[in-house]
Image 1 (cartoon, helix red, strand yellow):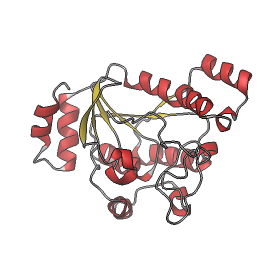
Image 2 (image 1 turned 180 degrees about the horizontal axis):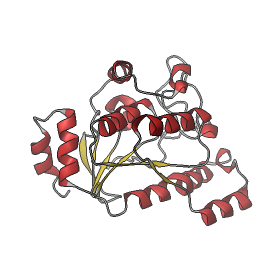
Image 3 (image 1 turned 180 degrees about the vertical axis):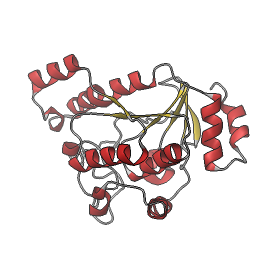
Length: 233
């Protein structure tokens, strides 16, 4: 839990932008932000890019994203004129999996789905985080039950680095209001019942009254609805 307590103390009385600037200075060239282009991530991207905060922004290009997600990605590059680094699955791992099991093997079993998530997301994430000491995310506390036990600053044991969630205490209404007030481009799938947007074959709209992440891997009755990117520390 390197630096955890001292960083918490330093961040305590700072504004959101000041917190990001402080972390960017402290972990210069060793701090990254991961975006999947949902509206929470678009808020954090705006905070970083609009304020010229030197935090590297990256995304995981799984090869199975929605067209709407690619549109947001492209518009974000056009608007801010700052790079978003893409990490792709390793071609040999992906080719071997598809050759052996086909392109939609994740529907067949939890094990197959986890294998696909590992190849398309977890392994590329490991490469994206390698050599860094601070990982910024767009996680909010009320997004799913297992995230409520997290804190805005925490130690990620699996990746051996600190994680900071700048909008951790925001509600969804807070996010929507900020997006509207700042005219931030966002994924229009959010307006069609998609609160959480991942790979197209694994994401559907959520019906009224359903859990926030019910639209992810909906065919898995016992799934915890997490792929492992943000497993609880």
